[in-house]
Length: 421
Image (cartoon, rainbow, N blue to C red; front, side, top):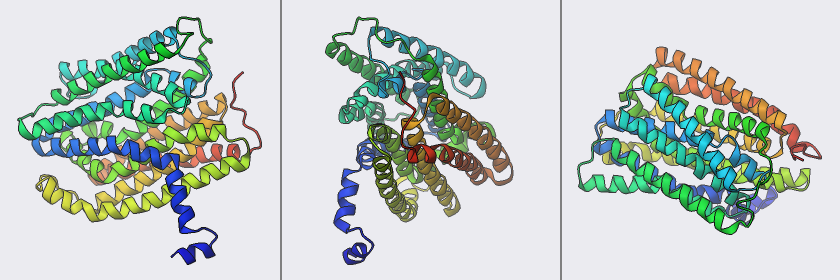
């Protein structure tokens, strides 16, 4: 194998070293600890909770993660791109905007879904404090403190994992318990990370740089579109197919979709800063090419592993409570690969694009959501859960193609026009 690789100009040793040095893959491994905890949590809850309660927890989790990424109104992007510096004013601004987003989501959730008042209150707390956390962790990532940022961002998954372990010994059948754990985790991480920033910043009380609202709104629209599209299946299933099908899909996504979700998040987490710091076209292409190669190999391995592992998980871990066929597994793998490809291209635009191009990215994202929602409705009507998954996948395909049309010229350009004055 090594000789064959050498004939093609790449040794196995070089490939292994490239994989080890891949920031996206290393971040995926770190995020994987949180992802494994979340996957295990979902499997435990799927086994011990009634399907309706498990579906409510899955829905709440999706709504919260839409809200926390939109809550700071682009403060995380502005911090990561070093357009502003964190101070007390930015902290209070992020708190206020996150609370407004949380209130809007609570109202929307009350109208659309069968969630009780306690779960709606949990959504408000999680989104408000989670938005603060997202903003603060962007500062640490901008200073290449990736490890600390990853640990803090995994606290929520760790907290609900602890509840799941308790549920193995003590009957916990309600979604309120993991929801309370999420609230506690987000409150802790928001307070802890902002206190750390306050301690190390001598200009904490200063006026700071004027907030770039134009960039903030463009980034928020872009990021929110990606998050909503990523959660679109979970958000649409309760309305189109019911809560029982949401429970089934969550099990499917937990086992078959988790590796692709972790890669999707890891690429977004690390590739932006690396592309932005690349000094030339050749360096940008080298960074992206290496990441894309490693990610493609990882996706292939993940798909093979999922197809082998899924039947055993359904039979032995979930005791046959959920019937999931081969066609559903293939559908989730295909859409998962589309997500990862879209994330690679979107990271290039986020790193190198101008505010105008970021705004175009948001238009593309919301257009993909509309297409995906329409596809989900049509697919659910004619093909049930399988049709809905592929219908949402059409939205991801549209996003990848459209984003690629922006990303490729930016990667091959001699200069980036993304730097703000």
